[in-house]
Image: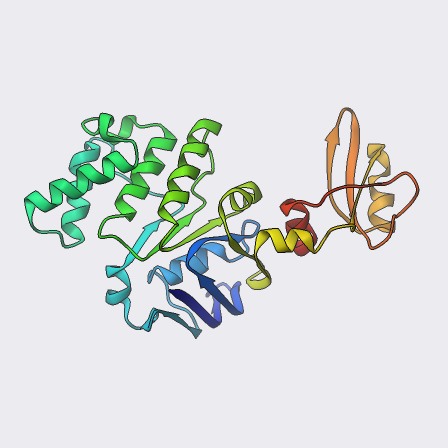
Length: 287
């Protein structure tokens, strides 16, 4: 099971080039797609989800041409977009039943079994009779996953699924995604590095429509061993350090500015070598 993207390009009518000759291979399991806002992630996700045309390129999923065989793709696709609209005055059970009918499950008994199974799987069964408008953000996201799982899809796309969730709901959502992603392809599109670090066995970073880096998170982190240096400096000195060194990130800490620098050798004697993490991979790639 593999999704193969070849030379995908897309330019909008306003002149913005969202995808630039992008090629990528996505294997089975959880796959993280990282990039800042405006990197082209949502354009790529909508294209894979058969909701958007591209200028040129090809996408193959197990012998299905994603760009031309849209109905075949939709039979095996689950999709949770960044903005997932629901009918606020309808119960979770009723709306999920409606989605299951739209997905082609015509037998009422079978549909009832599918809906109840998904409500249990997403920990929403106890709230099945409540109107979705009264759900928390995390509950709405879990409902979004429930509808995406209708029909036992082989490919699931989730776009920025944890934005705005509190830590408890975020952890619950992570557990659910991890369970789902064991035997199918789940593409997690996000700008939250920690989501990819926690969940994904493979990943890619895109920026300005281009593929910048791809691989296993652990290996990409290992590639930076001995190359990340950290130092506390005065906030007023940050410009000088950015001029002299390859500063990949900085943040305020205890009234000082903590800078992290990418370098093969120690930048100066006051820097300390630190273990790299996925944020270092991300920031060193998009800077």
